[in-house]
Image (tube, rainbow, N blue to C red):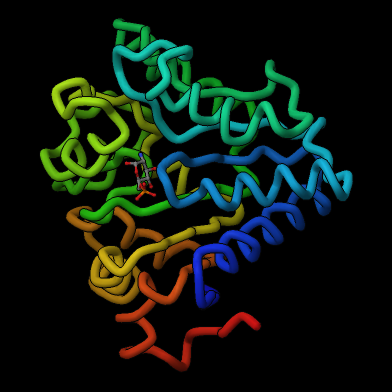
Length: 253
Ligand code: GLP
């Protein structure tokens, strides 16, 4: 595990974008696992700059997103499909047919989950998986549970996740209670994982996830078993790790 400390959000985003750009340079036909939430927005902006001003091309890449809200169509402004389109896909040269998300409008959960798992298998797995972390340690929408999930599934979101993500909706009641999420297994089977974390309110859960017991009650703790894990955090999010495990942290210039 490599942990990069950035003094602010911009520097964290730039470092994370450099790692993602390096992956695409190394393997232009990479399968990229992508994430949503506020944290990766700066990284997506930086990648758009790399594409526009420095010719970084995603034309051979394929992307798979972690999750989608049940009930929201791709053109709903709070859907993750819409988020990805706006924040990244429309700003780079990726083929729209090479971008995949769960279909939030499919009410046949079994069929949708099987479809997404078959898709992941047909892509041959993920070369680089980008992750954020939820306040309760979730990755994708894999919430704390009695055991680690395997395949794609429909999940009832916890109250804390609904509360945390309701900020993106006009009213909390509009926030869907269910989502489709990739399971933990394909996430941690990715050949490389890049975790981006920002905000002091994530400091405690991040330290627990990376240095506490590996337990499905903190889903991100499984990342301790991943051979190629890169963590990019800004000062607030890394504060607990810096005070307890400073020798393991690399400061960015
Ligand atoms: C959502 C997403 C996660 C993301 C998390 C944290 O729940 N499903 O993939 O990591 O939010 O989001 P934020 O970066 O906004 O804190």
